[in-house]
Image (cartoon, rainbow, N blue to C red; front, top):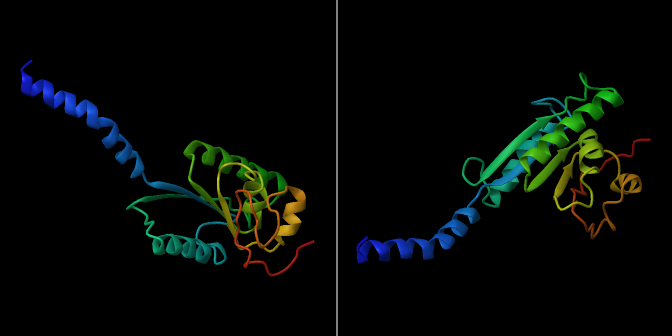
Length: 167
């Protein structure tokens, strides 16, 4: 090996950690959006579109630096018994663990109650939207917040989307 080749190899070895860390820093963010209902449901789809738009406003764009996996629990008509809802939740949680996302977004109560609360107080950030049950009620089931003003932990939520309390 000549001196020039040895210098090039040396420089490549010295610089490779820098290029590797730069490549890792540019890795796409992974987000999982879990819908309680089916695809294009009039309740969940606008929330989904709003979440994607909000991420784009913060320069996280699907296909550019963001990967979005969308899961549909279909609990309105098809999977509407407690057992079927739980089965869908287990499938979604398995997929979430497989993907290892940077963020999980749950849309509507069934997704939050079965997925969001299961992920409470873990390292995985969870945001929720469209719930009808007050967050304090869910917090009694599985603590995930300190208070509404400063929720704490890993679920900052979407505290403005609560309209009524279900029994």
